[in-house]
Length: 52
Image 1 (cartoon, rainbow, N blue to C red):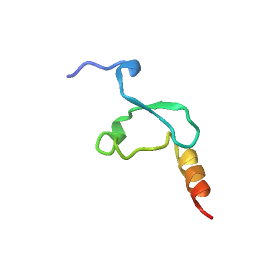
Image 2 (cartoon, rainbow, N blue to C red):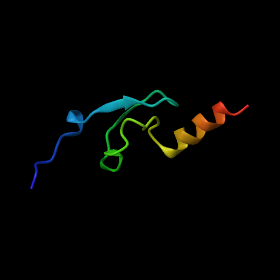
Image 3 (cartoon, rainbow, N blue to C red):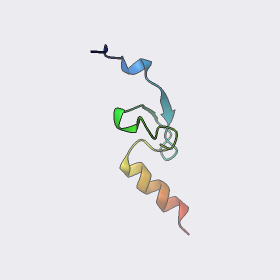
Image 4 (cartoon, rainbow, N blue to C red):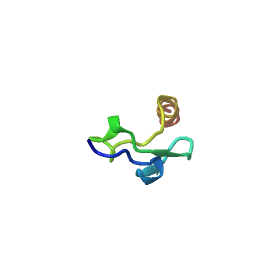
C-alpha cells in the first residue's frame, strides 16, 4: 500500500472567487486542470458575477 502524502506536498491553486488557496483532492484527480473554485459556494458566487 502506498504511503500517505502530507497536505503540504500536494499541489494547490488559488480560488477564482474568494482568492484563498486550496489543495488537491482525490475526487479531482481526473479534472484538476478544470477546477477553478474551492467550494460549491464559491462556484455559485462566480456564476452570479458572470450573469448580467
